[in-house]
Image (cartoon, rainbow over all chains, first blue to last red; front, side):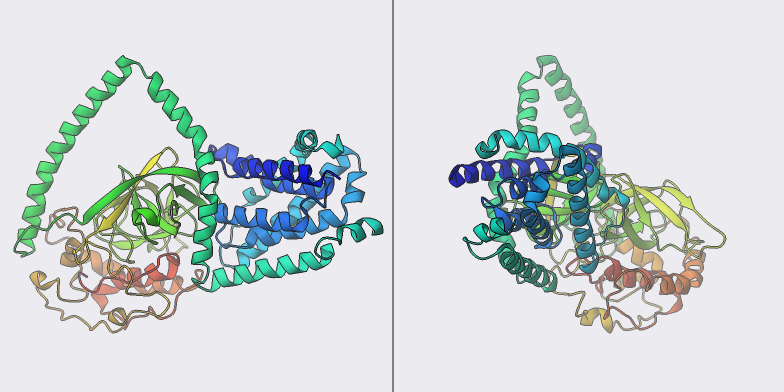
Length: 158
Length: 407
């Protein structure tokens, strides 16, 4: 078992992904920027569900909330939910070819954004612009490279 | 599959159990955060934890800036220096004129001695993180409670109003920009003194003025300044310029678009300002009034004596429109409308259009209860409607209380 090493790499990459997610960018770039943190958490949930698991989703979401959410707990709930799905289905997802994985990731990201959308509505901070959905597409497109990059840090998958 | 989940249950229960646990936890957090101020401390602690990340996030731009500065040539520095000297001279000249005007204004308003400027002190903060994507217009600045910041503090740049703080951590604060779709600023049209609300559109280059009646006296080029209502921003600070007025014969309200003066998408530094309490131009009751419970001062505003002479303005509630408007902006002295005949017909127009605009406001999101006023006398209809709209839309403003003192 190299759970310890996997966990170290995991925390490092998650931190990097958080920085990438909140890094100030020009408006147009920021609009199409995928949620790197969500992709990374998804990757770890699928690749080694025991290293992080649902706790990883929850705490990453909480950090994201601190940076860019009107309500604490919003991203935490959404990330917890998709992490749960990813952890439960990790073997099915893992066995799929890259293209199908991207499609699955797209669906998961849409579910994630939909959760945020509803929570925003319930908490009276609604954003109805279609632009909020852009990152689901770019996230799905970038899933393969991101996963390949993260594979390098993950000894077990190499 | 079954084996996989069984093995992972070795640490702290099955995924299903842990999911339920964390989901309930997040929902509780959301509920508490939404309900009230229970979680300010948690947010505070979390923002301490986030501090290193914020530093890391701001480091690329800081490094870039440092490189630019250290690589700047002598010529460029010299050119900048001469430019700054010229600008400084220009500003000094202007401020000389300002002193004279301020003094004259004080005299005209019957005040014994000149007032100090409304801004008591300010600090410069650097922008660390930006969310300018049409969805939320927020920025994070690198000053916090350590520097004395508080929630609902006005934020300016060198050209105009930028926004106000929403969450303040120990080392950083979140600023909601005036162009955020959830933000509204009580403003005044400088030329006419007409008060209204400027609502963010989600675009850094535009503000909307959705509550102006179709026949309101507004045209492209009009300058908007803060009106001092709402309890956050002091009166008289420049907000933006009207760029487009669209009147539709079927619509009771004009569609007016304004451009903010502040250059929010290029700013690197902003100013956070403390205002002198008790100054006529200061935002009223920074922490006293509460939009939710309503303000006693505001509720039972007595109907003002119609013949109230202008010098008595500081004491009375809504005075006659034209002196009231002039009095509301002492920070930026402007002569009241040049022709004495002009103010009279103007408010009348607005008074006729007052009721429709009031009727149109309630369907807007979350009208706050407790801000209703006794039905105002005719001449004050435009004022009253804007006072009422101020708390209704600016849900973020902590203390939305129109000034009973100066109006």
